[in-house]
Image 1 (spheres, helix red, strand yellow):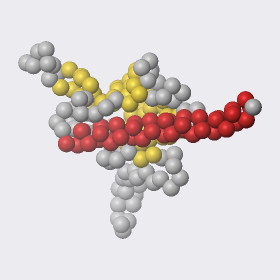
Image 2 (cartoon, helix red, strand yellow):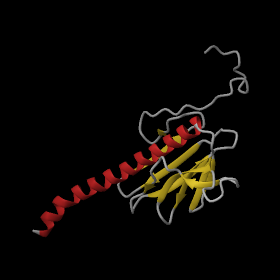
Image 3 (cartoon, one colour):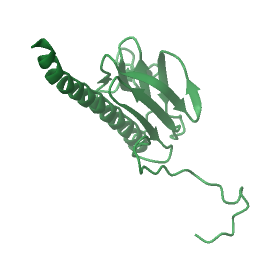
Image 4 (cartoon, helix red, strand yellow):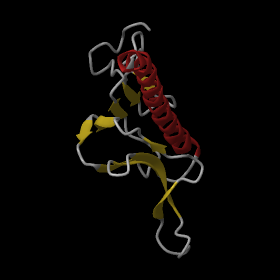
Length: 168
């Protein structure tokens, strides 16, 4: 009897776990989208922050210090976006900022003071699903590059490749 109940419950449990992990990947994708948006429309530096001990990814902003408005700006969690808490079995497998791998357990990727931002890649995996997200430095929408048929556009220096006179 217990074997039958277990056989019926296990697929349902795995489906719920897969949905939870997929939801987390979509939430991280939304956080990257907000990072790009806030960077594009604002004048303040934006940071994408992750802490492995809390399993939380959030946006930070370089803003006025509420305790000393006349002093230096300080990094604070962005009030306009929600943080993402990864499920228990989901891990960040890899993080890249401008093609440089980040290996720390606590990291922050920031936009540049001149308003530009790095190319960001984040790879997540759980017990039931995984996903790789890429936010190009010129794009406002991250791409999930592990899905079949996803095309990620890359900058090409036609002059540098000797193709400056090629027709478009």
